[in-house]
Image: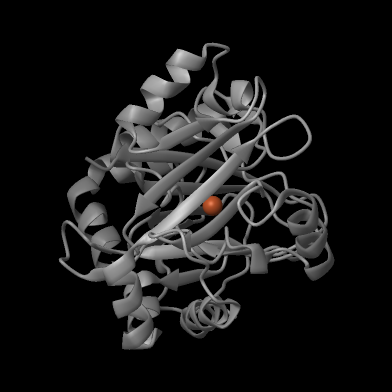
Length: 307
Ligand SMILES: [Fe+2]
């Protein structure tokens, strides 16, 4: 069922880029006001068409850095949405909220709709923040949260691939500039730690927003058997990614489950139609992916790095 208010629907026909050029200021303020826009009925075209729409609304499309999931480049800075098994759900999250900088605006172009399910559920991060018990929020305010990632041959991505270099000193330079602490555990084994804030203030609206990867990267988001096996083999700090309080102490499963239910209570969904273009303010709205059947293909682009 379509929620008529969210995402905010912009209907029309013809070139989406021309429409954006003609109404850029108004569309940008509607994006900040509603958090998400759904362009429906327009021609988007191929990856070049999507890039043109991105440039018209939000500037140069960004390269995908500090990769956490497999994606394919369609062309230039247009990517496939995460290549993750169709039967699995991708929990609600905000893009790259584990990094020191992140894209402010995300674009999802429905090239081929799924047969069943496969929506991009959306949850306003202000509502998620409000739905979380103030005691839980205070705990994160006080302690922050930490992402621990592992890159290796057997587990996680390879650091050479994730950082796009074979030069360790280049990885170290990148980490120094991105508030990440790297620890080399071997030639191919790298562990990184980053301490971030759980709540951010939206730069335009001034709202407190729940903007982090605490739930999606927490070990309790893995299937139970996978989690148990990985922890037995590698330890809680040895998983491809896991989240902790900023002081390195574990976040109890029930705290993560409480936050997960806050996302769920704030979430809404719509069914994709061919050539839908969903644009979201990454700090205002979290997104996920339902499991699906069929040949779902969603092209993704990102723009406007946070400062
Ligand atoms: Fe995502």
